[in-house]
Image 1 (cartoon, rainbow, N blue to C red):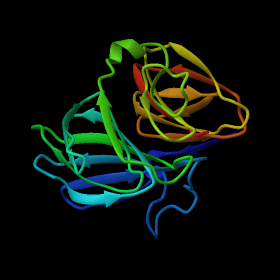
Image 2: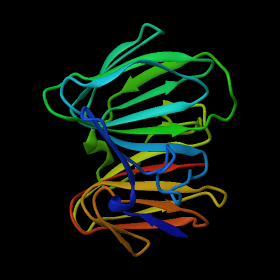
Image 3: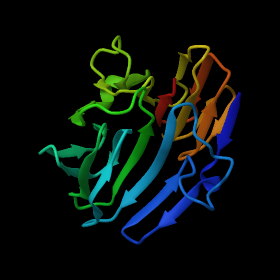
Image 4: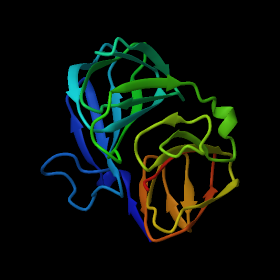
Length: 232
C-alpha cells in the first residue's frame, strides 16, 4: 500500500534562519496523518540560512542520519568530532547514552539537508559519530546503501537500527525495481525531479509511505534524485 504525502500536506516551521518541512509530524498541531513509519521517527527537510545553525544541544537513544543536499554543514560535538559535510555526503550520529552537538551552515548558500531519525534496536551504548563521501555518480540508475544496521551492507555507514538509508539518481525514463522484505515498511522522498512509484505520480519534495508491499517499481519522468529509508 502507498500513502502519498504531498509537499503541500507536510507540517512546516519557519524561524527565519531555519525553514523546515516535516514528513513525519514532530509537534502538536502538525498533520496527524503523518505518523512514524516502522522505526523511522523523524524526517525533516531543513533549509538553514547562511550564518545560521543549531547551537549545542543534546540527544539520547536515537540514530540520527543527516543527508546534505546543498551547501556545507559544519559539525562539532562533545566527542571532539569536528567535520564538514558537503552536498551528497552523509553523517551518522548514534546518540546512545547521550551526546551534545552543534551544527551550522558553513557555506555561502542556503544549507539544505534531510534530518532522519531512527529508533535504535536497543537503548544505551557509547555515542558515536561518523561521516563519509558518497559520489552521486556511483548511484546512477540504482539504489546505493548510505547507512545501515545490517552487516551485509558493505561500505555503508553503520547505525544501530534495523533499517537502511538508500539513495539513487535516475535519468528521464530510467526505472528501478526494489524489493522489500515482507515485514518491512519504507519511506521514499523525491529530492528532485518527477517519478511514479508503483504507478503513483510524485513530484519533487513529495514523500510516500510504503507498507505491505514487497516490490517497488520506480519510473522517472525526468532526471530525478531519490532518498529512501527501508524502515525495518
